Image (cartoon, rainbow, N blue to C red; front, top):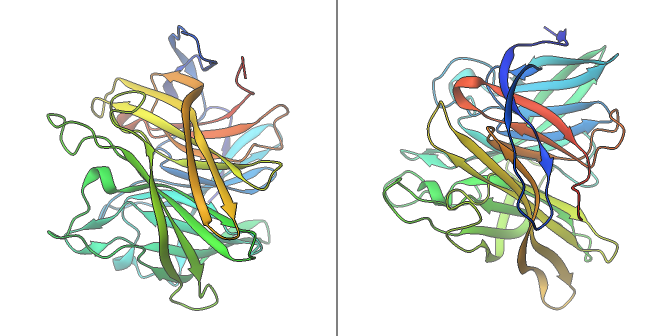
Amino acid sequence: MRVCTRRLGRVIVCLMVAVGLGLVLLSPTVADSPSVEAGISAMVKLDAKAFLVANDRKGPQEGTRLKVLAIRSGTLCEEPLSIEGLPVAQAPSDLEAACAIPGRDDDYLLAESGYYKGDYGRILLVQVVRKGGEWTAVLEGTFTPFPAPTGGSTPKPEQIEGMACVRTGDGKLRLVLARRGGPEKASEPPKPAVLVWGSLDDLGTAKPSFAAEGQAVLTPAPGPLGDRSAADLYLKPTSDDGWRVWTVATVDKGDLGPFRSLVYDAGKVVWDPQAGLAFVAEAIRPLWALEGVKVEALADPADAVDGTVLTIGTDDESYGGIWRPLLAPSGN
């Protein structure tokens, strides 16, 4: 069922201000604004007007895990999606990352954050297409990028919260995963966010494969906000066949907040025919600071909205979430 409305709920939103390297004052405000009831924990662009979004419902929790958000005639529409070929008992748990696959139209990857008591820890390969005016999602395969950890559950700082797929100079596909960093418990010191990358093969089968080739600290602890340093990952292509690494740090004090987010540039991913893929860390460059919201999804610009350079989604827990196109950051 598709729902299109200008007002999907009354939610707390904030004044979003692009920042350079200086101090910026941000103030929250209350406004009628399109919201997503379950929040947005992952997002990937489908076409000029539509985005596939996921939420982080866990285990046996009822409710759809996927939706398509689309701009139609000046309104924001949402259409729930189920994944055909995936039994209800195997429904995704805690989806936290999504990405497109270069050269494979309509194919996307969705990542669960990690293992829980020896279960989950999967990346799903799905085909998402629009037929007869309706969107459909079909499961094509699953794989686990990492083995189950000792104890059966992935520690919070090691959970996957960002993912991007690139085609490197040798013609192969490589998957880049971002582990969130931050503390395991509020009383413990934060750990660094980490990038892990490797080859992605066997996509034409029900069991794609990932072979890790390298890793590097994305953002040293304590990170720009002293909490989670990588709540998503966006690789922005550059003219020299590399990718700028954009990610987002968040502060989450509880289901009622308060929340804080900082989208920032952490460096560059480069390709060398001899050395392979590598991450070159640089001094953190703040791009957008957002008060009162917890940004967990970064995606390509919304072509249907003039001037957009990045699209964000938030998971504001008890408040739901919002989708927003952003202007270029000022001072950059």
